[in-house]
Amino acid sequence: MESLSKMIEQFNNQIKEAQQEAELLKEYAEHLETASVSSDNNYKFLVLDENLKMWVEIDSYLNNKNNLLPIEIKNNLNKLSKYVEMVTVCKGIDMKEETFKSLANINKQIAEGLLDSVTTTIAQQEAYYLAKSGLDLVEAYKAKDDVKMVEALDNNQRLWIMIKTLMNKGQTKLPVEVRENLVKLADYIATNTIKVGQNLNNIDKKMLDSFVSINKHISEGLIGHR
Image (tube, rainbow, N blue to C red; front, side, top):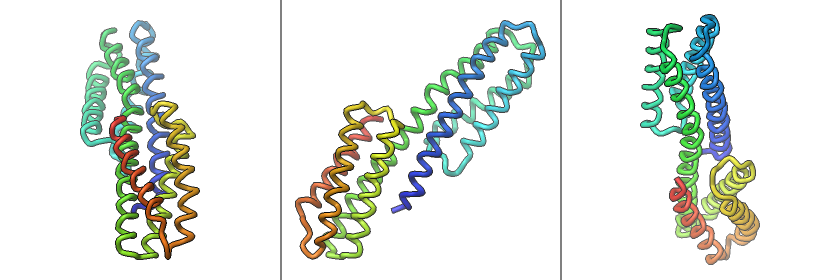
């Protein structure tokens, strides 16, 4: 399994970057709307220039190899970036009021969808790792391999610690009740993983099965909340 500490860092960075980009998009949407009815050409030029620079940054963000967004969304955003560049360069400060506002509307729509796309993709990633972790537990038990079992238990526990951290930070649109249940499950996993690990010579099969079952059902649930 990929290093969980690296995965957590990647998830947190993606959320932070998406939040920053969304805030910038909203900010420049407001500036573009103001510029659309302004008679100050210097202000119009400044707003268009800064908006274009922001879209260049978004383009760089999309091309980051660690970006979690699905390829279809990346492609659509790249196309929008090229469109904003073309309109800005070709029309400049002479663009009509409705063109300014169309650029503002693009910013607003992308701001609303960007963070949702990132958090949805993270949920899909979490679902994969939960299913994979459950499978590792089953395989370690079948192989009667203590080393693999310790590794599988440790990975599963750290995965649930990560999930608990994300739930407590509120970096998800899951309902409050669901988040609270996930935190409780994380505590259950943490407490009982220690108990299972202390008796590898006589593994509590029912407890191990409960870990696998929890991972399976939560994995399916995360996919269902896309």
